[in-house]
Length: 318
Ligand code: Q46
Ligand code: ZN
Ligand code: ZN
Image 1 (cartoon, protein in one colour):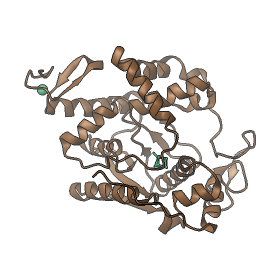
Image 2 (cartoon, rainbow, N blue to C red):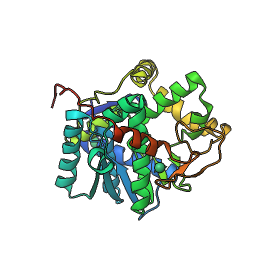
Image 3 (tube, helix red, strand yellow):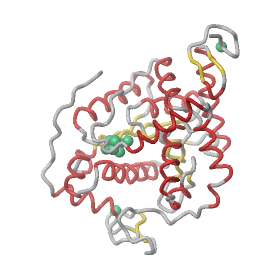
């Protein structure tokens, strides 16, 4: 197996590119794919400051690394979700990465700074853990990005993530979600610009990138990931990809090229509020909302009143 570029021994084959790559040219490919996504979708301009939401997993750490390699001033933002030893290990991975590369890291711990954690919020609000977690993440990512004057908020969603979400939205014809499934969402009143620079890389590639770059990431799955609908969608797409290399890329990028503009962007979402109400400001935090108090502030109030939920320790693989 030889590198397509230099004919030296290759370390990875990428079937959708119909090519193999050595270490040097694989790393270059990853950077080039991110640069291409940034350029093609106008995600960032040279010199802009970007806040990277880092979970400690392979995607967000690879993204932070690549944005730095491409010359962007990229700060990390880590949210401590309070999900037992999974969160402890995730935080350690992020801190170790930032320390060894001397990168600026902002940390917000839900329990210390906001007075609750995800397991408690989920139990107290009767939401699923991922719903309570997602609402908290969206709210706090937006707040930190705006307060810090960042030009954009970057997340580590990769091609597998976006293709799986797209397939799920297509299966159910979720037209509001389809309208918003773009790799860049412009800044709005109360929202920072949101970008997904990894959309041209798969999770196999971001994992390989981390291994090659010596990035020690959190390999365990979140113990609260219930249902795993997205995992099943990913498996389905992996089957398709095995038979037809490039299928995930085509599904997602042809949707962006040919279909996404046919769907109408709904008003900013604030889960749990009436969809037709006009958007105002949260009485407590000032965030955009269609209710008097936004869904996040309501969730936080409910969770703060509840007895903290203790998670049983999980077996660690790392
Ligand atoms: S961290 Fe949070 Fe994920 Fe865990 S509770 Fe669900 S949303 S699965 S990316
Ligand atoms: Zn090479
Ligand atoms: Zn609020």
